[in-house]
Length: 301
Image (cartoon, rainbow, N blue to C red):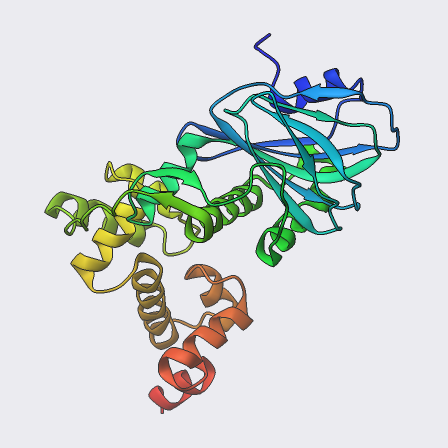
């Protein structure tokens, strides 16, 4: 077995039952973990967190009293926290805190390196720190609160959590952290468009998957690029972001089927990759200014 994860270590240190934890890898090899940490006891003693190049965000689902903490050996008094506040812990700082209180929280553990992957996708320079008080303070942030609460149902059955949804939440939280609190170097210059072979390959894949789902990660991987670089370069090359380009091709294919087949609208929606007939009708109407059934009828007069 490998070394215990952060939340396994904390659970063991406080003699808690294993806490529901969800692990995700939203960007390359970066591991992000979410956990619902709860205890009704008030005798956990002094907790020393593992020292590592990582961060912890804690959203309080239960108000907390003042707490004694020590950062690199220096004493601080952590102020009372209201329900919905979140605290930030830089785990590279030697940290201990007095845990003699009941608690209920959603926590997110992530390495420092993942912030720079997000920053690179946002065309920002390296993130050197976050403009947040380290543990002693707390922050009221509606974005963090709402994103963390989105995961509450998943903690009931972590093994069944929707991986794609958890990835989206992780990326959304990390993007918000970089955008709202990131302190770093100057942004990197923008890059150019796709090479000819990358244009051909991406379009081949998109045409082959008109009737199904395709993700930016898959397209970027086929072109040997990061997700954000691919999306940026694709738009530079074609004048449209990938999702809009794909939608236009799906609508063009739908027009062909409306004119040259007897398929129903529901069958055409399925053949062209729309979620259902209603989605097809809405998308077609926005693009063409007319519902598909009427468009078909007028052109077959």
